[in-house]
Amino acid sequence: MATAHIVYQGELRTNCTHLQSGTHIITDAPTDNHGKGEAFSPTDLVAVALGACVITTMGIVADRDGLDISGTTIEVTKHMESNPRRIAAIEVILNIPATNLTNDQKQKLENTGRTCPVEKSLHPDMVRNFTFNFI
Image 1 (cartoon, rainbow, N blue to C red):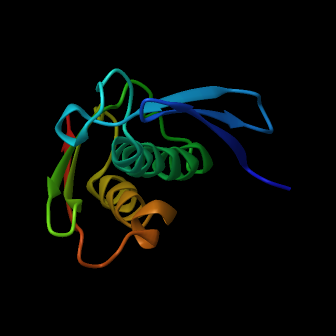
Image 2 (tube, rainbow, N blue to C red):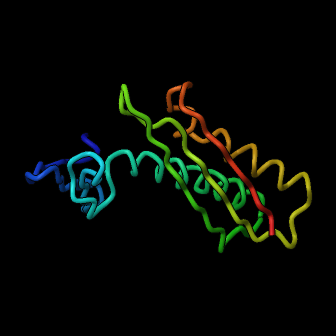
């Protein structure tokens, strides 16, 4: 079964439907690449996918181990380069409430985040910078 259905709406915009849930995402080309920048660009979604995957896999481990990391926030920054135009680097900064986590638990969560499926799927030339702030 397909994962998504995408319709090109013209003017560098797409409407993407997640087939299992019916959820929609609109994409728009960025202003520095002929678009309006009114929605996530496809490369923005790659960066967001990395951040979401990091915390999702950490959440799986946290739930399994009886740890609470709810309230974690993530800031994702994408850096583009040209010739060829591609994502050169993604920075992922996590702020994790960790008042009751041991150093071993923190390390386990960090290792899990650094090895999520999206991270393992990205081209090795793309730089990934992770910062785990346990607060």
